[in-house]
Image 1 (cartoon, rainbow over the protein chains, first blue to last red):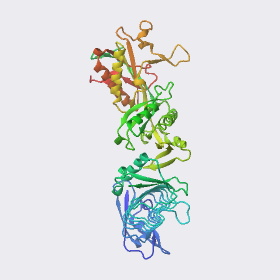
Image 2 (image 1 turned 180 degrees about the horizontal axis):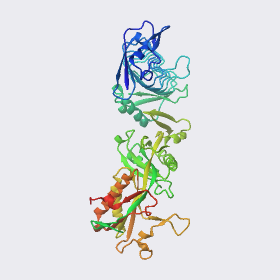
Image 3 (image 1 turned 90 degrees about the vertical axis):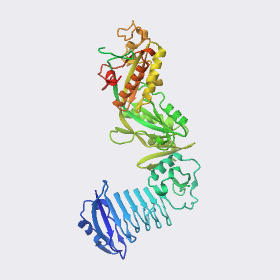
Length: 235
Length: 310
């Protein structure tokens, strides 16, 4: 399968919206065709080649892959509605990273701006750095936020993290959050499900490698909204 | 009988066991410790000797170490066999619901992964979740859904479904011995040898059946009746007696397995254990039950199983 490599040539003056630029959309296209794909920049619609150099190689495994390189802090909606394949960003990203993704894998080797992973329904998104405000929450005006998939944040998070979360897993390596009074302590042990979860998360390595051996403190909530979620803090 | 072999004084009949296609699944039952896992497994596989009247045939396949189970706790693998996928689904739901869910500290997982060569899936946690009365929750981990049902010792975790695979039921050995002690010794040794093998269970009590049956009966309503040919008490009374004057007790071992090769391997191991006891231990002859080869597609020829070894 092909790996498409987009290397940032120059930082955009305004913000660039990279929606639609996904591994599936690019698969089968020649570099010249990819260069001619259009994205918006402020009020303009310009070709990708304006900001990115395009290269294609073959990947060793079967997945279609998109690799982005450079400081993409002003590039938004990377992985927007991603439904398959793999995106790797070697650098920071802008807003709405991985928002509304439903399948596939995305890895950001830097920090993400605001509204990362909003309304995610599936797939896996890993952010090595910090995430800005409203990460894993709802899109403005929406009743529900994240509802599936797994978001891993190895840095710190801003405000309104996981607002209106319905389903899915949020794995956070930062400091434990202050608890809202609408979360109640879980008295019963949940050793079995914790082992299943921890073993799955441990394969991401780093701070998660020893999760299965760690003691946990659980809280149940949010009682203000159905209350069937769970907050697990590993000691 | 055309061509018996004699090994260590034991006559091995030149005959075959006739076996049938079945549907099966494996469940992994874990618990706080091995004792409680065994309580659940023994209960769930109880009253499961024969599909004639038990709905399924089941048994404990083997113990599992904590490093072999999904949740890192001690456990047991059980195999359940039924004549159809539909009956299997019903049996699994009932047995897990009444015997595993109820047992302290247990969790239950599929013991066969869904994938190629899988005939179907049956519900595990999928239907049991309603016991949670609305407080049940589930989690999808690595593409598999687990249900968490609140109970008085915490929560009962059950994988949503387990896979059903085609299987083979009815492999068998008949052990003809000089007396009941010799027959039991041979049968116990054979069952012990078979229990060391994967993918098989011996569903009768202790793995052994004393009331071996034949197809048909003089009573119209009975489909099966005592295997008079192998009843020592009917020697001299039944025209088709297989009993010789030195045989006073016959016991049968029935084997259900996931594949033909598994059942054959178990029969071979059983025969080798019997032959090791030998005629000195009172075992005179090993035979097998069949229906003339017309009913079941799987034929396990005793001589072929022993091969040129022994």
